[in-house]
Length: 408
Ligand code: GLA
Image (tube, rainbow, N blue to C red):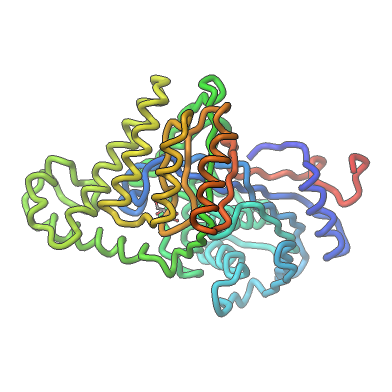
């Protein structure tokens, strides 16, 4: 957590906070969305992932209260949720209030003593786009509760608690990648996460030096994890683990992380139906993540781009989580000179692609990918050129944004 001067957007949120609660915020928690460069559907198999935290964030302006009430106002939805810390119930339906309630509930279950809070939230991470908007919300809220109650929580635990809020309170079975990126992302770096040990390593991207940009392209098809085949894929992976644990692979098999391509070649025959393909994706994707890190270290961005294309193929054919729209987006991107690599990103079935694009080709990407795609599908595709930013930041004390500022 490090301090930084408030932006216009921060101050606009402070004004929203002051209008709602008739006082100034004590601080601001900022948590980013993420785009996963490579390592898809590997996190819940204890594999490797390589996301970047992006400059699309959720902001939570907050002030502690002297009682046990929590009042949260969402600027985007123009809705308020309020609850007591002594009686946190889940709201019906897939509503944003549950993410806030869930974070408060898991923090208390873990033994942290919270204070009541007034909070105003605003985000510009596209929702349902596969860019980690839920994790950004959870982590920003967690940062607010933590700071207001002066709690010491290690970054890894912050991510695990935020994930637990989503898994156990909201009821969505996500892995750990999004929360880790929202907490520990680093400016101009990608974050290599070993989802078994939760060790991380910031890998320099050096995109400017290579004249490259990360372009996220939204297919215009929203996806919701809960109605997708996400849980089904997780179950398939668990079934495959059970089968492989009973045949003789080198060591014990707790998750697909324990399987190598050699094991798969020797024992894949025992996996029925689509299971062998599912495992092939996970095993090969883990290898691609490690090769990607190597390529980035060597400055071989072309090799990295090829790994992105290969990842897409594997997700489309072996893991079967792509969609005609995602495939079209990647195919169009591949035909544009200056696009170095492209793949679907996030859980799939809609949402976004991530593209590595030469700076001078960003305009042709807009014309030849986004506009052509819109023409062919009639869907409202959009693109975002993203920067890699730091994870959770708290702006407080003298640096906290105020509703009245001479800079406005
Ligand atoms: C979603 C989940 C992540 C991860 C990806 C697939 O984004 O939230 O934990 O499983 O899908 O890689």
